[in-house]
Image (tube, rainbow, N blue to C red; front, side, top):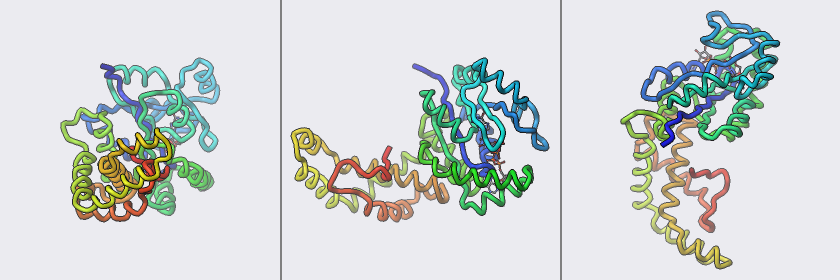
Length: 297
Ligand SMILES: Nc1nc2c(ncn2[C@@H]2O[C@H](COP(=O)(O)OP(=O)(O)O)[C@@H](O)[C@H]2O)c(=O)[nH]1
Ligand SMILES: Nc1ncnc2c1ncn2[C@@H]1O[C@H](COP(=O)(O)OP(=O)(O)O)[C@@H](O)[C@H]1O
């Protein structure tokens, strides 16, 4: 069995809290995480150490690394180049470690396209004002650089839908709890703990069986009625509306709480019931296939 580790991409606008959240995640040994130190032409910030936060290099050294195929991916971000050195990442993956790539959206797109064992997470701020106060509060960039980075954030945030998961960093503790659960759910961790997603699915099943049997029967009847050819007819015959509803609702409730809210509510039946009531209005019960904004895993 391939015990190769996963590439865990963590992206998000400058100042959202990538470094803070990753710093906490790396403390949890069950997650088997290693941090990929990037190469950059950006100058070190106060307190940043070469070889720890980044490999700080000249433009020429960076260009050589590209020519020598030393980088898995690279991109330009607000006037500086950033890239992921290949050697260390491949070494750690082969040791079964999961490697965090804290990289921006262009580089992430390259990795998602070129690598097969990738899990991508986009970190979101609660609001743009909060993002601005965090980046200003960090006090590491000049006024003009802060403005350029906030402008860039508006171009990055719409690309969050290209990621497997979107997680709000309202508090580092809540964001870490969410990402830890994702890693457990995606079977990346050594943890004996079960993902809270499993318990959520059981709660959703109880609610569906308690409240939505009539809906399920009508959904199955509609799909059969509207089946217009032999392929659709056979699909309709095999359609398990109850199973599909549980799957869709569990996945949507999980995604919603990752993108906003206190993660500890995920196993609170009253909270889940409230979320499901709103989601039920989105189900297209004339078709098996749902609209793209209703993902389902
Ligand atoms: N493509 C790519 N982006 C990177 C890499 N290393 C860091 N970045 C991203 O470059 C952007 C700027 O990083 P940095 O200057 O440290 O600013 P910060 O986001 O405010 O910490 C961030 O989105 C980082 O995630 C890398 O190796 N490749
Ligand atoms: N959830 C949070 N709430 C408030 N401040 C935060 C939060 N997460 C990070 N910060 C602060 O915001 C600033 C940017 O965090 P940082 O981890 O450097 O972001 P990034 O690596 O995404 O640029 C830092 O001063 C950090 O202490």
